[in-house]
Length: 408
Image 1 (cartoon, rainbow, N blue to C red):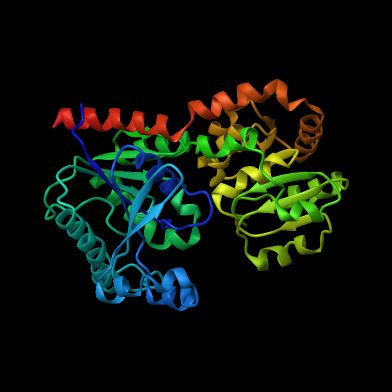
Image 2 (image 1 turned 90 degrees about the vertical axis):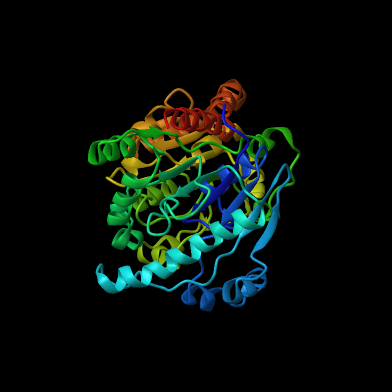
């Protein structure tokens, strides 16, 4: 059995990110039973310029420039964790690989290592787990000079990093180092685990994305008021939640959905790039709506008042390695879901969602989903989501960590 331990979470996503986030979801669930320190990805001077007008950001200035007031408790309905803000970092992604980049990146790694040492000292940490969620460029594992050593340094691969242009620049090589140096490697999809296991000759454990079940089952159990946008709609809603990614979303399929279902409003809730909408003419479609991001606690209300949820992804080398976070959220909310058949992992949900191999099949699946009686599938969908909860993922990971500790 593992001794009592703290969790140091560090990832590409910051702790106050407004959309569903894998690392934040892990941290929130772990915080129900353990003390969790969420080390935010360091802000660079470029980030400061972008965030300067944000009131929540101004609270972090002492931490960024003076290394003071670095801790802030973030409270959720059932738990809380400690947000940790490192010193300001250098914007280096534009630099090519080489001596200059490596030398300057030592400073960026220093600011993360510095707060790890500070947390250990300030909170008298004895046992801890370090979890790096898809940020291999910075502190992919805890360096040997930091004492005490973690029970385990874990690196999590979320996506096919070579297909993400921004982080691929330095991330491909960095992820190789992360996979070789971490104690435990995990991946969120079958393809990622298979590829890393083959490339790095090591065991890579599958821990797929899960659902914040307690939050999303509220779509069934709580009498939410309709979101404001729904009062402006005169038609029922087909919904997608999450970032509208040019790399993942099938724009032609989205257009065909709007054309086939003119009697419905097609609603995208999440961040997007304005130029993508202009590029593909999506901003000119009258029944297609992009409303930006909403807090995760607000999403169940949007799902509750929608008829069908969709995942219209492309089928390519990037999506083949994706286990979408939103699938278990949709299932926990009990809403019928139609998805492209883009990966082995999404195909595993064939019993509880509608899967389509072509655009034509996708349209037909939506028609079937709109005709079904959701109550007939409700219990089955919610049970699948419950089996894929973050608590179940933590139990599985604790077993892996326990085996690792015993082997040492």
